[in-house]
Image (cartoon, rainbow, N blue to C red; front, side, top):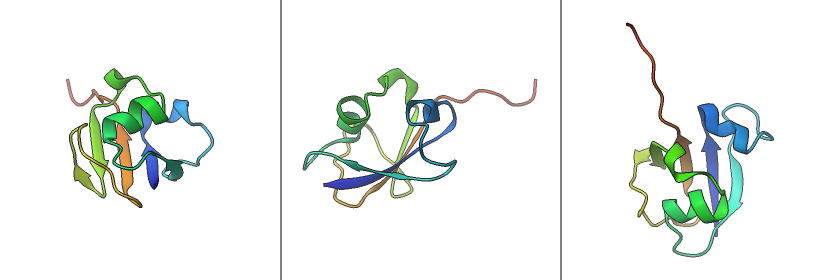
Length: 82
């Protein structure tokens, strides 16, 4: 099945081709989870993923993806006023 993935902030270095904010199509096994997408398909270090959104909703790593889902992945982000 096909899911559409956006990588944000420092995660973009793992897939430099797409323009900023542009998703790319990714083929995943049927019943794949967010965790499988991150590790087995995209080969991203799990510790670099802080937030996973599927179709705009926060989901845990065990969430099962469905064909056509839109997945946004964010690393831990620090900052703000001191």
